[in-house]
Image (tube, rainbow, N blue to C red):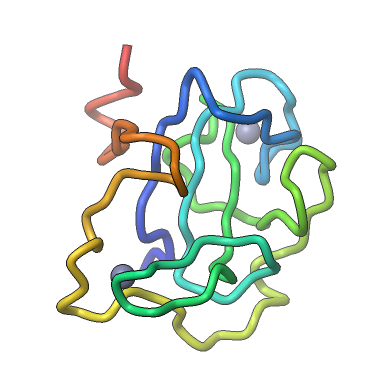
Length: 125
Ligand SMILES: [Zn+2]
Ligand SMILES: [Zn+2]
């Protein structure tokens, strides 16, 4: 089962995200995936359920956008430090079931962004 909560396509992005967390490419890295695990700060958080901003995030290039991320970023994404997901705690880090922001497509104060659903639908044009 996937530990990806959501994939947001952030092109044109509010920031550069450095290398893809799967293949290491620095080209067309436009997908930010929210992961249901605790990562490094700053990470994703939610004021709706009081989650501090420590959720793991991964950036993926267009070729890897629908794949399961292998690594997450550590610290500011653009500096390129990455860590294997297998090294994170297996405890779930996720919204509460009744969270009003569960379906939010914002990334902090940026967005809304298109959500990638499945490979057959492709990337937003
Ligand atoms: Zn890639
Ligand atoms: Zn929430």
